[in-house]
Image (tube, rainbow, N blue to C red):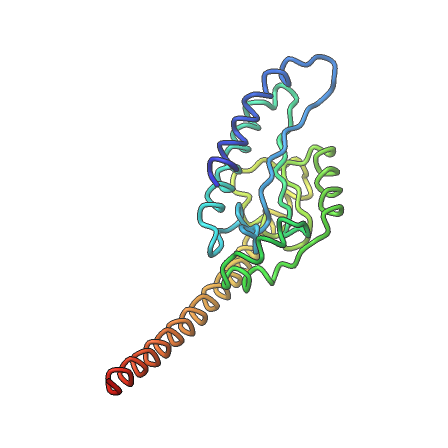
Length: 215
């Protein structure tokens, strides 16, 4: 995951950047890094929060955010704008396959975020890139999460900067509520799994005893 999402993105940018800096009279340029509003999702939270079952994925996406923040400082004098895309779960064949394989707990947590059509996500992202935004989100939850994880990220919109300053504390409280809910869900599912494992152990023990007794 880290090799593909983080190192792969770095290598592509490194290869393309010299030509982008050398352009003349072509106006501003843009580099886009795809994150996710939820990690694996709630998923795709990757840059905003790590999510159960997606440790490596989350690490790679957190790394992209740091890469984008530092890179923006390095290329802003060349009129190159960095954009972080925070797409939610998107209705694609790949997403359908992912749902079949990801852990049960991940599916339970991710169910709260919903999914969007690929064309709608693509249009929102492309419009954000054209507008020169540093962060592009696709729905309200993603917007809240981008604020919660803004940290030292640049902000080109005075209105969004105002929202981050005025409502950052409230959004932090909301994010804590999400976290409490996730941890409670993890505890409940884990207890149920342990209970099921214990019951299965007893059944197997009884069957084994009956087989020995019959002998």
